[in-house]
Image 1 (cartoon, one colour):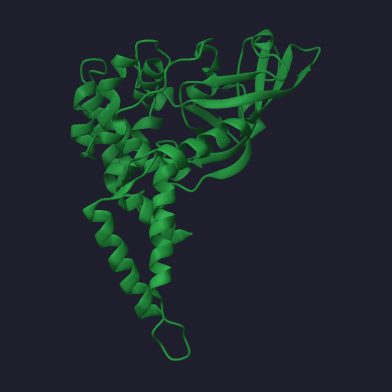
Image 2 (spheres, rainbow, N blue to C red):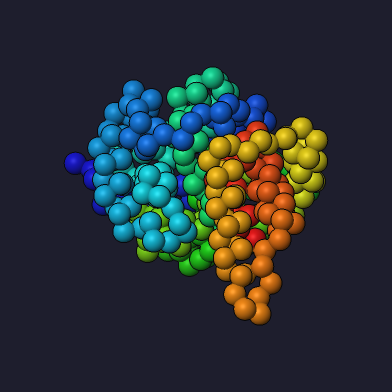
Amino acid sequence: MSTIEDTHLLKPITDVQLEPRKTLMPIGGYEAMPLLPIEIAVETLVDIIPDIQRKTYIAKLCAQDHTSTDSLTIDESTSIILFTMEWNPESLYSALNRGLRSEDRRALKIWFPYLKLFLTTVYKLSGIARHVWRGVTLDLNKDYMKNQTYIWCGFSSTTQSLDVLESEEYLGRAGTRTLFNIDYMNAKPIRNHSFYQSEDELILLSAFQFQVTGKLDSADGLHIIELKEDADLLRDYVAYARTFVGPQLTEASGKLLVSSYVEMRKVGSGKGQVSAYPRQLESLIRLSEAHAKIRLSDKVEELDVEEAKRL
């Protein structure tokens, strides 16, 4: 019988061939969901992932040791651990990406409670600019034309190590292979909250839009395709957020802003130090609102304030 332990490979790195060849409607509506405990957030998934509650229990046990990094709660860390776990016949990651790649966008509603918790958690993690890799043991060279723009609808698991992909556990060094070298500005490192911490995994968010900037074919069946995040899309995204998104402070985020400002004044009240001024509180509020806009959220939540404090 298959267990989590004997299906530990990062299959998401090598599932790129499952991406649809057409643009799908963006998902929307999960933002309005309340943040729920992880056990409740997965209840709507029982019909499609029968073992989800037992796997959630295992993931939460693992999360006890992971919350010291990135200031995540146990439930938040659990949402990532659950995302990284692999099991047969279908893990949460595989089922989620299958839904994200489906034309039936209504079927995604059962995912909203989990997506709310998972994406809230992922947005807390500091994104990093990196060249990352993913690949598949197929020839996808003709599917990606130079200077053309494409979208990957699902979440993409990647690695910074080419050696990982070229190991025999993944693609190997012989036979037909396609490697994607991806220049991404906001890769999310999840190693600290992964079920398999030996793997240096970074994820690309769903609906990742990119341009093919280069292609290289070798004689041994290897195809390398270079991708770069679409800067025009990012500019359009920011313009949309500025124009149409006006997030409001929630009661919880308002209290956190006040307490943060009080702490700033305490830190700056010593002899020879400059105390915090109201203008600094205003800056903290504006940064919090800006972070909420980036998430296209109509509410400034505590995670936005925490990110503003880090800035």
